[in-house]
Amino acid sequence: MEFSEVVRRRRMTRHYSDKPLAPEVIERILASALRAPSTGFSQGWEDCAEARWPAPYWHIDTGMAALLMLLTAVDEGLGACFFGIMPKHLQPFREEFGVPDEYTPIGGITVGYRADDAPPQGARVAERRRSAGEVIHRGQWGRHA
Image (cartoon, rainbow, N blue to C red; front, side):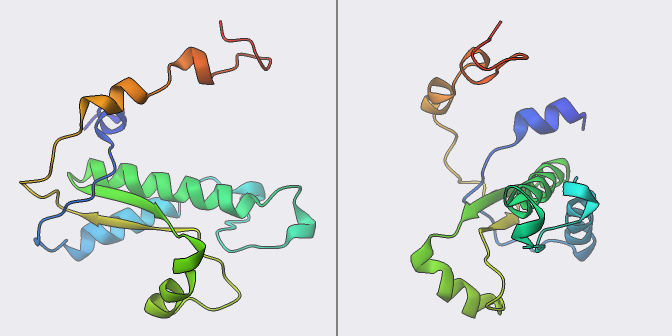
């Protein structure tokens, strides 16, 4: 699949079939995350040395790794969904997945084969998507053209 097609087809999938994923597919998705850019090549998905950075770049690094995983899932013909973890669900998430207290998970990713009976994406999604002119600043804040 061409990269532009992967980007165009990427959607958050919330309805999956029961078909299991092949282990090698899971490994390819995880390997893509390891190729994500990271601040200072720190590979800082868990590097919480706040004094070292002016912003919590480990969250940005995690987002980049997550996006590569989402795109790889699409390239594999799968659906995937990144979900944030609300504060009230943090402790149950830690307990379910054995996350040590010194780490603060910000989200998770589900991956699978999209269910045949999954609802189609509504037309309102395209209506709600902001235009490039509204969100892209070209060379200077406020310059859109």
